[in-house]
Image (cartoon, rainbow, N blue to C red):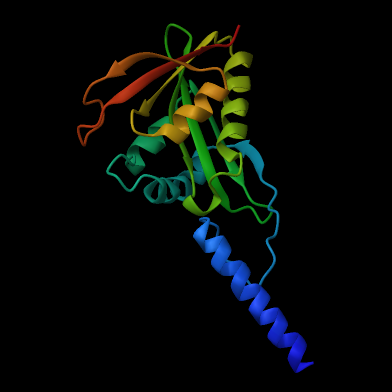
Amino acid sequence: MAVLKKIRSRWWSQGEEEDQAEGFAAPTASPLVEVRYEVRPLTVAQLDECWRLDQRCFVDGEAYSRETFEYLLTAPESVSYRAVTPNGMMVGFIVGLIEPDHTGHITTVGVAPEHRRRGIAQRMMEKAEDGFRRRNVRVVRLEVRSVNAGAQQLYRNLGYIVTQRLPRYYSNGGDGLLMIKSLV
């Protein structure tokens, strides 16, 4: 039995070294559990939970104030959803507004850092687009940081195209990109 433990420890430690050299995380003691997320409407009833999650998602000074979220979630032109775990914990949110010209505007999308890269933002984007379609929106726009390659790729994969660079768009002086998508 001691020999088997020794062989296993050598095999695992060698595999961990190879994985670390290739940029993979070492295996953990507990197996990975697949989490299933549900996308539900986001209302003012979830205001505080959404605001707290926003503070975690946007640590670069671009988080919204609680008052801004209250406005966004109570506006009649709001199209808003949240992603939740099976136990009901919010791990993502998306808020959009229908503008007077019937353009949909995705104002914010956030996913908890520990839940990113699992398709949550894509599912929420698709749900928001469906919400816009039901309200006769034909074009959706959004702004994204020019340095946020991951988000830009997600939006491109969903059919958005860059139409304009927005110099110094963000409060920290960072440039933005305006992206649009036709829903027709």
